[in-house]
Length: 407
Image 1 (cartoon, rainbow, N blue to C red):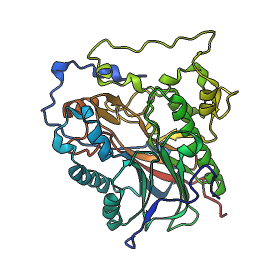
Image 2 (cartoon, rainbow, N blue to C red):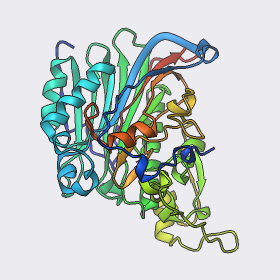
Image 3 (tube, rainbow, N blue to C red):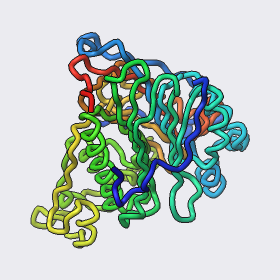
Image 4 (cartoon, helix red, strand yellow):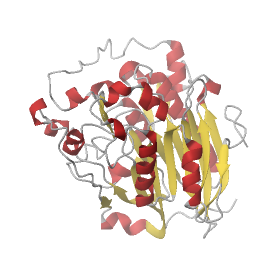
């Protein structure tokens, strides 16, 4: 059953193959310490979950990758973001090769990509490698969108849904939801979501509304297919210190405690601020009588779904795979999230996540990179990274306590 606010079918295009505590202060560097020409070894290691946490894991595992691959048009239209990046690293033909080499090296079972405007080129490569795929382009003038690929010999698609947020008045962003069944076991099902949330830092109400709607649709499909476990991947354009992150991780948020223009935390992530190269700070919120007087009824309705309700809620109990699997203080922040998943001349911080629900457990994650390595590289993309984001990759196991009932 399709939602009236979503496209009536899983569109777009489907291809198949028969081969089926804040730590930024630790990195206070001054300009003289940054050596852009110094070669940097880009090496990412797997970090394993502790033994005690693996007691619930089953032998049936799967790996999910989430990667904002930097749309070709965005790279060309925003060249000011890559002033420290050699031009050869920006060219699409080279980036395409690097991105595919990254993906094949990690060998994920499910791939969620954002900022895809060369879907057919990627699909041709991935289909030959045994993946099937689907694509949903953004509405409006944008030419990029979200794409999802899965190993055709490991998962079969049971149902797919594409969300056009424009249909509910929430800009031109899109998202995907897919219900899969493992080919080797029809008792193991999985719902995967893929989203690229609106970038604009000043429109926190729209960001929250997009995420809230995606989660409500995910809960509906999960329940429809026997309370199947959920993985939500994407570029959420919100930092771990933000109100939006709190909403995702705690299932609710009192929006009146936040300035909607600061709800995503992005404004605090200019490289100069993060690296401590100057005294730039963000002032405290101004609170009057305990409430911020900066939300109109229309903005409240967009954020929470009800102009008379200041509490945004969602029905899923979510955890972040990276926050769950302990990592090094060289790469992780106070709450366990990566210190940075994106780096260019105007942003250094984390906006990408892999969220999961009950029924599955992360058993390892591909660690990100130390801030010092990113700074020495001068920015992303670089020789071994094909985008201005780092991919997140997590291997999950179904919990032995969770077997999806037949529907």
